[in-house]
Image (cartoon, rainbow, N blue to C red):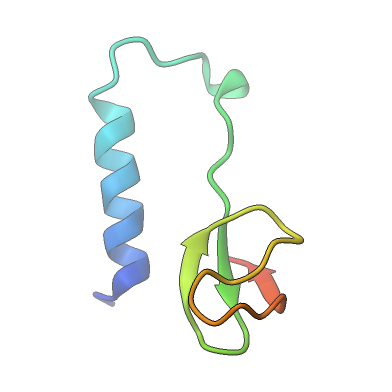
Amino acid sequence: MSGPLTKIRNKFSNRQSTDTEAAPEDEQPKTVLHECTACGSVFIQHTGERCSECGSDSLVEQ
């Protein structure tokens, strides 16, 4: 699968692996991806906020 979600995951895994001052695994903030059920956009956002593409508040965690 080579979609926008894969690109986002690769971007974050590459950035974390090159970070020399990474916190211990249990202290690193968890990256949570959300998908908008209205338009299908996938992005990093806190639950309860609105979709940056269509403004819908129908977000589900990935």
